[in-house]
Every structure is written in structure tokens, then in C-alpha cells.
Length: 107
Picture 1 (cartoon, rainbow, N blue to C red):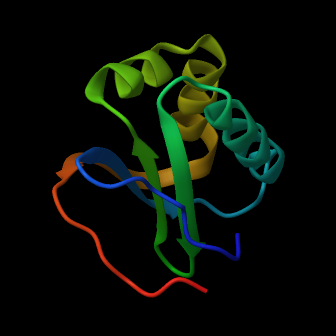
Picture 2: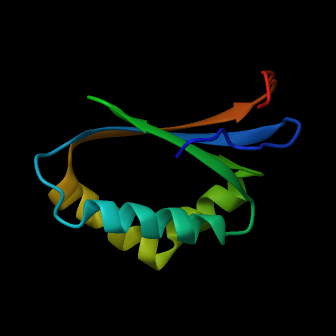
Picture 3: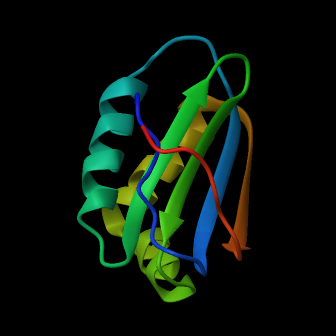
């Protein structure tokens, strides 16, 4: 991922997923790509930014809390979350925040 999400004027919501990975891929890369593809098809999805060094950080942006709720309930996403608990993550945390203000420099 080499660009920043093109989000609208606030307010909107950010789902901040931080994680520590277990050793080995075990299908992680393929599933991560599929989840990005699937999330982009969901109503209310605005974009995503992700980075991984020691700690992985993925921030997805959503129009409203209802859109986040529907994404969490998506059957394929639920399967990926189950595999994450079992195979990919030694620890993780999800935070949901309302974005009130944003600013920056565009490329």
C-alpha cells in the first residue's frame, strides 16, 4: 500500500486494528488481500491505510457506525477473524474512533 486513503470531509469513522503476528504466513497474505478487496465492496467503506514492521497497524475508514457493524457481520470477514485468532495473531486490538478533523498535504 503506497498511498494514503482519500477520505471525505469529517466526520467519518476509523477502525484501528493493531496486531502482533505469529511466525509464518499460513495463508495470511492471501486472506489479507481478499479482505481488502471485500471491504472495498462494502457500503460505507472509504479507504484503508496499513503498515507493518514489528507492530502491524491497519486503519480502515467508514462513513458511519452502521457500515462498520455490517462489515463485522460479513460472513467471509468473520471467517478471516476466526483464522486470525487461531493462526495469525499472538495479540491484537481493535479501536473505533470518530474522526472530527483531518488535514495534510496531498501528493
